[in-house]
Length: 315
Image (cartoon, rainbow, N blue to C red; front, side):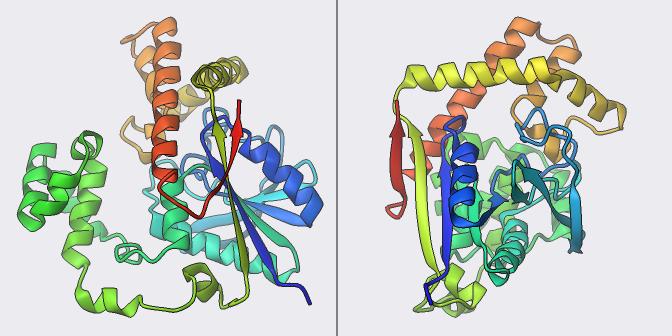
């Protein structure tokens, strides 16, 4: 009997990950598992680029109040779209919980799981031993920290772990949500927990209880800066043409506030600024394209540090 296989297709935004994953699914009797931190949110279809126009969501179960189900992309199932409401925080710990459940089910049915998405933070926590990953959110503590300013949170983290605070880049230093999570982890991490993570098996194999699972990790990279900007520009135009602005307006009408986790998505923030009269449409598109391009560059920076990814360049 051949060994079970799992494929991971990651890489920069606009690099064609979903299309390639669908091709793999057809060849390998596979099912897709979303790994995009924006596409996990309900109601954010056009802005985040879900390929589910007029498709029905097939609900399967509730898992810790998360919605587990699938859509059909051509003939292949894709899981872990529309897991949570836009106002709900969703951590890498939550993603690991949902992904393990779905991957295990796919394997038990004799099919091949194909994880697809560019949120490397989720993949890192799913594949590798990280002391902070199994520290669940402490909502009571978070609520208390939410009332603090960014400066106060910086001071708190500095007092708890000076070295960690000094290592943060400027983006993390100014991001309230990330500072709160760093404080949460620092308060809960201990040496006994770290020692409990020692194992001779790769982490995902251990969690799935499949020692001989073969993991194939592929990354897609757009080699040309000009091509990257061109692809992202076209995606932004397409999403606006398909109704991204109306989608965000509908979310606002439903009562979602600008500070809701789901609405922190690139594109949503620029559309909301336009709707509030803070920028014009040309500025909306320019800022959206710029933010997506900057994000794509950050993705590659983090992913390139992972020696297990086999890269495929695209001109």
